[in-house]
Length: 312
Image 1 (cartoon, rainbow, N blue to C red):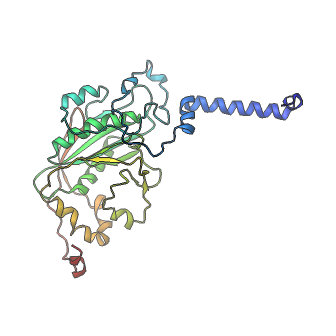
Image 2 (image 1 turned 135 degrees about the vertical axis):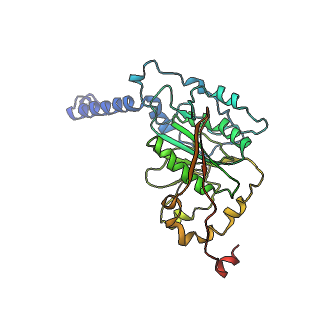
């Protein structure tokens, strides 16, 4: 580079502006997060090499001064990718509590070292799945903490012995969760699915519903009928381990047909638009908020047409 170019006023002005922009970026996001954004974009990963979900969580310690606490980095500094998921030993509730010391009563958590950028409510419909629930809580709490989220876990428990209505329980969960906070994201979660990669972010898309478990595509008629686009997590990130369980009384019939066949004509009147339930109890447990509801009897549906009957 010639000295004449260095002494050029326009060139010197360009250097000053470039340096100011670079310093501003470092100040706003931190150097490590800037470089991670360029260098650590998740690629298809080797799931034969996994890490413990609690790895490096101990690095998140209380900030000395909450009034000057910075915002969390856009990308967590302790991401490892594929996680080790096993169901050989059923963890006790005491074990889960001891391994998650910053989780508050009701399953509420805020990062102790920074201000969370996102607030997520995880809503789990539940009935008679105690073993699956314990496995899920053992992995889900540290998984969410790794992502530096402010979160709360809601367990929506269906009372009585009628057919298990997962969709209605999810609607109840949304209704009740919004009473507690103005959540950025309402994440609807199955009790028997455990995420396998901490890059699978439990935050919502700004405009569209987001499908987390890309490889497990369930019934999404309402979204399609409403003309909404679905944002999907990349396949190499949206991997989940599924826990086997015995069939719940009435569950197969609920998912496998008549109500689903009527969706095209009833979807505008279903869900939040016609939600009726009786709140029986709301109790704060050490690892979650338990909401017990009576959702009533299954709705009476019009008779099926011959075409619909042939599809059963």
